[in-house]
Each structure stands twice: as C-alpha cells, then as structure tokens.
Amino acid sequence: MYSYEKIFNKDAEEIFGRIHKLLKEANWLILSYVNVKEIFTKMNKSIDPYYILDVCSPPAAVELIHDNEDIGAFIPCKVVLIQHGKETKLIMPKPSVLSKEYLDTDGKVAEKYEEALIEILERIDS
Image (cartoon, rainbow, N blue to C red; front, top):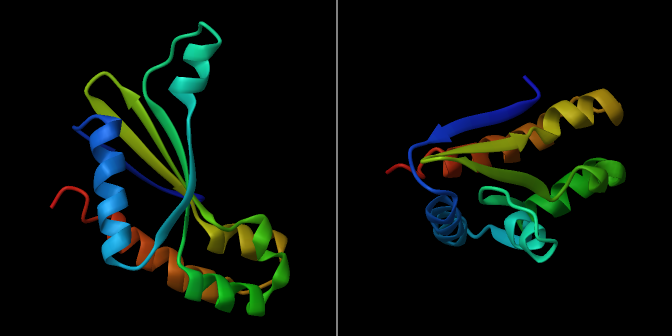
C-alpha cells in the first residue's frame, strides 16, 4: 500500500493538536505546516479544514540521507489531515514505498522510521 490512512471521529484541529503533542513526546518535529483552509479563505473560497504537515525525526533524517541522499525528495514525511463534517481523514505517504520504487533501495531504513511514525499516529485516539 502506498500510504497509511486512518479516519477519526474528531475535527482536524483536535487531531493536529494531538499529533503535535505526540510527536513532541517522541522527539519528532513538525517542521512546517500549511493550513489550506486559511489560504482558500484569503481567496474567498471555502473548504473544510485541511492541513499538510511536514514531520521529521532528525536522527532518522541523518540515517535516511546516509542510506541514499536522494531520499530528500520524500522526506520530511507528509501527514495530511482532511476534515469532512465531523470526521477527519489522515493520510501519510509511505517513504519506504517511494524509496523502493524511485531510489533503487530496499526501503528498509525508510520503513523503520515510517513504522515509528505510524506507531505515534496510532496513539491519536488514546
């Protein structure tokens, strides 16, 4: 499968806050984020809450770049939150799949860290 996906019965802002807290506890970072709804609002367009996050574990980045310097095309990891009504869908493309398909690697290093990130994201509901 190309991505990790999960649906939550919470709004995107609540999920965003929970992700921020869980990542911080695990020494991961949100390097940047885009609030797409805010951008659309400035253009007088409407959209439900929609966030695009760039998340990173600095030690993971070191190991991944040493494994294949072209991995920068796929890191930091993207986490997308799309709210529809009272549900929010979370999508995270898997760097291991991308690195296997495009970088001629076995994807094992990327897989190690995407699994760690998925473990963090699985705790959103707890």
